[in-house]
Each structure stands twice: as structure tokens, then as C-alpha cells.
Image 1 (cartoon, rainbow, N blue to C red):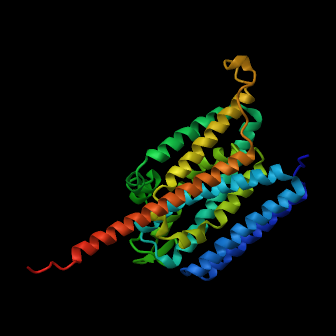
Image 2 (image 1 turned 90 degrees about the vertical axis):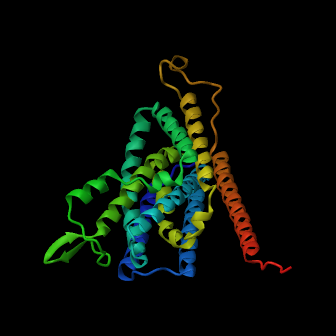
Image 3 (image 1 turned 120 degrees about the vertical axis):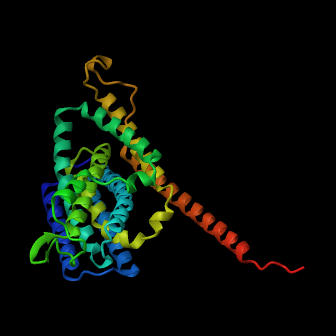
Length: 341
């Protein structure tokens, strides 16, 4: 029998996660630096282990269904968060953010993301509770996002600048250089904003855009606001270290976007089936549920998510290594001395 999540477990978990985030923020603020590969790896391992311990505790106190929903939701949000990193890399490069302060920028972006996603989760939970047909909307949106993700080109993202940022550039005096991590600096005796303001806004609005597909996606796995929020927290907490750990590897994961697109498409289809199964829309089957619509269980979803990301990653690395060998072979032919007759 599946148990309900105890209230003390939910409150205690949120308190502990808040303390971890505050401690992480203080570390970044007091000692801005570029983390080494070892440091970034240890932090990523720590946050992944923390998520797995949390899933184990959920298994003990609430049963396997809740634990499975958390794992599937966390992996979904983690995979979508990795997609965020591609955009973060572009933003950091475009605004020439000093690497020493990139940790702080990412941490502020993560906090903005958690606040925005918290609001989205509350809105989503309210819509689902009062309007079951919203699953049709969520499903259609995820299917559209999946197709767009698979067909979009990298140049489309690189050449698109947020309209709000263009407005700020035109109407607010902004210095040409950074002043550490400060958002305001003194230029010719006048206080003006630094490019750091633009970077924070770019990161924050990007997170808002990504939340538009990640929140409907995880609601396709669980309708528990607590699980949805904690899965987002655990996915985003290790994102900053993952940014430095992966580094140039992101450019080699060419097929990763197809794996993410497949996950979104799969969850979109799952949402449609769920909407049909619990249908209340009058013009569909007379407002009754559609009996043939299958309900895809949590563990099937978990398997599809893991398989999609694994296949996409392995295929990307194989192609990257093959391309590297081909370039090396070509280079060797170019520098090979010509035999004299």
C-alpha cells in the first residue's frame, strides 16, 4: 500500500534544502573562484548522492511509488537543466563574464530559477486540481517543444537576444566593463549599472523560458507539488558545478538535444493518454474517460528517461571521437612530407 508523505518529512526536507542552498551561496559569495575539476566533480557527486539519499528516505517513509516519481522527476529536470547549460555557456561568452565571477552569476540564476519555478508549480498544481483538461494543453505544448527542440539550430539560440535586454541597453546607462561582481559602479563621479545586471536578467529570463517546458514535463510524472519542487531543487543545486565540470564537453554532446526532445515527446504523449483516461471534456467521448487510453506507470517513465539520455550521450561521444580521429588523420596527411623523386 502506498503511504502518504508525512507533513514533518515535507517541512524538514524544505528546511534542510534551504540551509544547504544558503551555505552554498555563502561559500560562493565569500570566495569567488574558478573551481578545479576535482572540486566541481566532488560537488556534483555530493548533490547526486544527496538526491539518491532523499529518494531512499522517501521510499522508507512513503513507499516505492513516491520514490519512483521523485527519481523520474529529478532525472527529467536534470536532463532539461543540462540543456540550460548550453544557453548559459552562450550568455557567459557573449557578455565576457570573468570566469572568477561565473559561479556567483550561476548561483544567482539558480535562486531566480527556484523562485520562478516555485510560482509556476503552485499555479500548475492549482490548474490541475481545478481543470483536469489542462493536461491536454500541457501535452500539446510538450509535443510542440519536443519538435522545436529537435529541429532548432544552435545559431537560432546564439543570434537571439532577449527583448527586455535590448530595451535596457537603450534606456539605462550601462558601463562597458565589469567591476568585480557589482551591479553598480562609479564612472566619472556617477553611479551606473555594470554589465552584470544584464547577465543576471539574461540568466533569469532564460530560466523562466525553460520553466515553461520543464514544469509541465514533471507534472506529467507526478501531481504532487512537493515532489515537483524538490525534484527541481535537486536538479538545479548541482547545476553550477556541472557547468564547470562539463565545460567543453557540452560542445561534444551533439545528440543530447535529441534525447531531451524524445523525453519531452514521450511525456507529452503520456499526458495526452492521462487526459483521455480522466477525460471531462464534453466533446470527447461525451465527457467520459476513454477506456482504451493506457496509463504509463512511473517506472516505465523512469526507464525511458534513463535510456534516452544514455543513448544520446553515448552516440554523441562516439561521433565526437570519430570526428576527432578523422581530423587527426587529415592533419597527418597534410603534414606528411612529399617523397622526392
